[in-house]
Length: 500
Image (cartoon, rainbow, N blue to C red; front, side, top):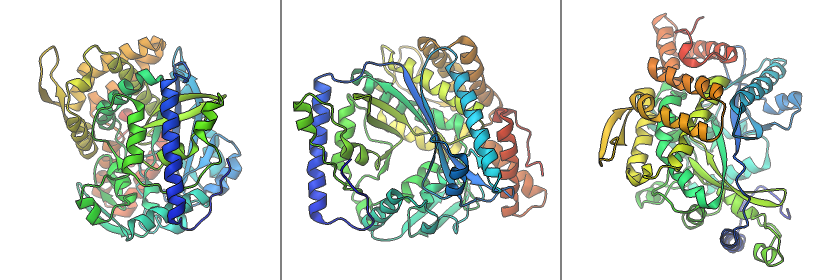
């Protein structure tokens, strides 16, 4: 790639040139779609997990570079904060015993990383937001020493023009400001990738949007930030506010935030890429030497690097992804809804539920998104983030009738969605033993009304009742969580209380 990332600003000519390149990339994508140049589906899925580093005291450790040196594996990379890592699992074909295989690979990789981190009194904690994070931890000095993160911070701060306001009204109220995007680093998530054909992209993306609330309801794991008990899944409001390039006057004018659920169902992947160009100015206007239309005229396949880079700075909860593998283009839906953790078993169960459910819904003759307004899906998402496993959601009435009804998320999942997810996994040819075990984890959470967030909150209040102050209680919860996380027993079976 003929580019260089440097700290500092971009002048108007840089941005105008970049805008032209983005338009060329979008035109190139349109031609690729029209010419049907995309890879045939191979039922490929991928998985990424963002991780936290914490010491034996439960407090964050700002030492990802040192830990990565010890891990010495390309599967592990830096993330935004010095207390973050990311692990990437190679793509797998969705079939057979793939779920058990994923679980074993994750247990092996995370176990090794945890042992290497322990050499410097750190450890791997897989959780949506580390409960012991403090405002002094989330400052620009603790951003990872990577040019791209430094530049991204500089550009978002410049676009914002003033400090970021974090204002989240939950069980308690958090109100503070930040001079950088560092609070974003508190949000650690699981990203689930699914390769799709252009013709099926819209069905899969729409299905993923429709069930995002359900994913959060059963998988919430981020109830604390800066010592405050907020939403059961506090990542979405935190992420939106920590990356918001809009000063208050633009917010009042209805300018869209870069962390975005969306505003409508779609009929093609092209619409989402086009929206990203239309609604969001470039943050990293760095141009590649490639001329995408000329590459296409010569019979080649363009990398569309500017489009890919820009797409990565628009934080949709279900993101369209363009990629190349062995010179062949493909499209993916990247599901970014879920928090990390609590255990490998829980992560794989969440993945099984998602992949099965999306497959089944995408193939329904009367699609869910034709029976549910998009605004309802967005409202459900916020409700699930606020209330987690106790959420009540608006959902189309069962049968051939019309209209919506309000239903507890746990009842919706057990009665309607788990059977669909099982049928979807059957359609992927996943082995019944894997299907039943991992969907059984989701059923167990619903039956006991326990997920990672509810366990953390219960353990925290037990610690307070035992006489600990807030910070000591959060540290005790984090230490106990870490021990139970590495036991790999699913969270709904964990004993109550911090245990120390």
